[in-house]
Amino acid sequence: MALDAIIISDSGVDTVSGTNPLRLNLDGRTADIQVILNYLKHGGQIKIPIEGDGFMSWASAPKLNGIYLFSYLIKHTFDVELINSFYNEKNRFRRLLERRPRAVIISTTFMVGKQTLRKLIEDIRNIAPDVFIIVGGSFVYLSYLMLQRSHEPNYDTASAKDDFLFLGIDDEPAVDLYIISLRGEQILCDALEKIKKSQPIDDLPNSARLEGRAYHFTRQIDDITEADGFFIDWESLPGSIFNAGVVPMQASIGCSYDCAFCNFTKDRRLTCIKPLDKLVAELKAVSERGIRYVWFVDDNFRLGKGDLNAVCQRFIDEGISIQWMTFIRASTLKKIDVELLRRAGCTEVQLGLESADPQMLKYMNKKTNPHLYDEVLKKLLSGGINCSCYFIFGFPGETNESVRRTREFIENHEYPEFEGNLAWSIYPFILTPLSPIYKPEMRKKYNLTGYLHTWQHQTMNTDQAKEHIVKTFFELNNSGPIYRGDNLDIFHRMGSKRRKSFESVRHRLSKIALKGQIEKQDIIQSFNHVLSEML
Image 1 (cartoon, rainbow, N blue to C red):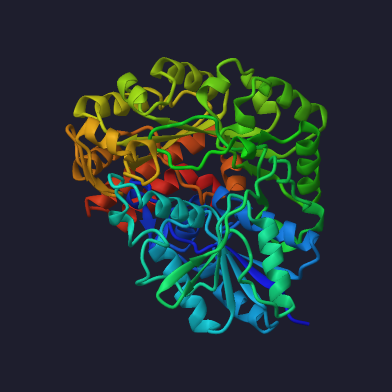
Image 2 (cartoon, one colour):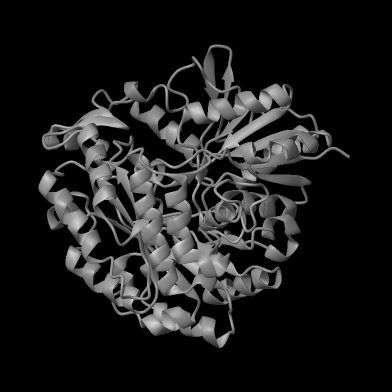
């Protein structure tokens, strides 16, 4: 019997972090802890297989968008398969084609632009030229919003023609059906049912098709209901989803903040907190499937609700043994009992600090201040909670002085003596369409020109921001950039003190490598010094 569909969660394109490309590489591989141990074991070269690689790391967690769609569609009796990362699972995709899928479904949650999607579609068409391709998700919806903005004379959509869908008809991906919705699950089910029965799909609402030299858009309906349907039946999912030992999960969806650089679409009906009973049940369900690490992918854990201590106590009382990480605003952590947080399994928090300059935080509409950041980081790191901090350099109003304050803030919070580990990622400002800063009046306010990765304003430009990122990378000594591919089991065996020494050595070597002065023997000797007991 033919497969109803293959779901593709992501293409596998890297992030736009300014510090990721600066990290240490060994034989063309990012120097994650397990890669380094392999390198040392084999006398300065990488030999496959790499023990511990590709699982038990935050980076190895499958994408939640695909898991959710998979769970939703099998609940509605469709026979589907899931590809988490197309370019990493291309051979498996080829094998699944032997089951004659009626459709390929692509979620664009992690798509960074039209060219990424077009390349993915081209590669799929080269393998399966006649398969029916359905594309939906956040990037499709944002593209539709850009099309609507194209009728506003002062809103720059012309620059976005090569990066967003629907703004032209040249160089468009060979997609058979776009679903334009913030949800769209029911429309997807209707589309699959019609394809299954060989019925026309022209009357599906909230959809678009490129017909000849023009896009045809169907009627738009409000298909958003209250956000109570983001539960996943983990018990019904195939074992392959749990192979990495890490899964993503949501304790809430949505964000009530309006940061000036963010282009996320906000709708209050899509903002809700998962009931605690249900959250506990899901954690127990994945634990029974062998999961020991959970990445809560909330924008702000449980929307920053002031009951984090009570949630932690509930996890402890329920015997939840899973270790977890989450994005959370610093304000939510101000009154947290750190020991309780740690006992509840929280091993790391992600903090979108963006800047340590008070004026820059005002420009960004962050509604916070560096004093709070200082208080929270000291509390977490001294209590043994690892902190991953994210910063933006170059937002309008940024100056050499404001960058210096942020750089010194990071340096002042490296705390080699604390048990918790500080890591960071620094992004150059991106002038993103549909974000508040992209509006014509904001551009005028800051004398801001350009688009996406190339811009300038009255106090800085793209190249200067990137120079500041490199300068900061080189000036920090007792912390390092985020390596999401590190095997968590290995790190936990290392202990806090050894891990800090390891992170310092890895960062020092990355700086030497960037200068082109690194020697293989220096790498081996430096890492042997801190990892000898693990070899």
